[in-house]
Image (cartoon, rainbow, N blue to C red; front, side, top):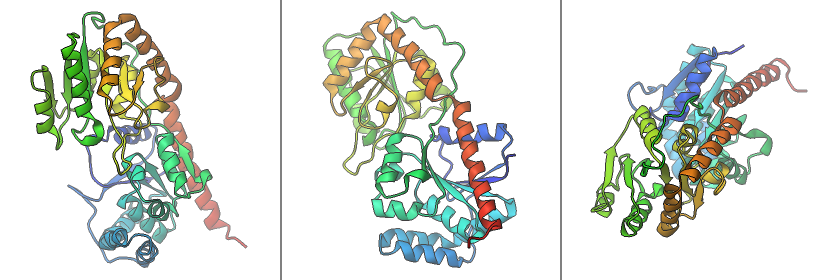
Length: 377
């Protein structure tokens, strides 16, 4: 039977639709999920810190003094979170991202002798120092990675393999795909934060090559970020439309109307890169072909020239060539669309993946009950 679980996030981020989708699915299946935030409106307040938090901070200090100081500042919030867990009668604590949320979840769970797990995603594990990541996750009963690349980053820190599991974010497969004027439409769509990791500058340079070669296309970009002014300068004369921030439903409308979704992400010097981008899965589910790069975990989803195209990162010429080929062939786009939907059905079915999460939560609670009821000799 489902039981109360508390989910801890740093903040309520509109872009993290994959987390909200999992929470909604679990609630639909009868789970009581209490969602708590460390920052923003409704953030957990502070109380006097507990001894478990002091011990956790002390163990972190030799590995990363700065991280230990950040935890020290959050100890009153960890104490308040522990009281909240007691009030909600939660039986498992679920931290999202291997950052401060994991630190606080671990402290509060230890204070109440509760099991906790951590879902890891991309930036939180790709950029973390291995010793700090290992310390953060040392008491987590289970680590859920949404890609094999994220799981590999956790394993590289020394976490035992039996504690790490890959559970993909699921995406619903629409029964019907909206009709497109396949051979007449030449619309490229992309969305994401306008930041260096997303590679929008590479996409715009690829569009400049298409423009110079008289390839018919339009390009629409959704998102906001620190690079917007620079990107607008790069886009001058190319007919690029910047849409600003769009709600998830509006992004889906753009995906469905596009001929191809282009994701030009790159790997940054600190190791940061995309995992399996949510928009990639949404495009495949909608039957819209994807052209993306090998910088992140897209190769776990896309087989080049089977259900999409994969090109090297930071290579405008390769991206332009793949876009040209995809836009030019109605048959290719239809082939990619059918294969992409099969990929979603076989690997990213939301019901199948949410059942894996349910199994994980139940196993943690059962094992905790057994360990507290049957003391070790």
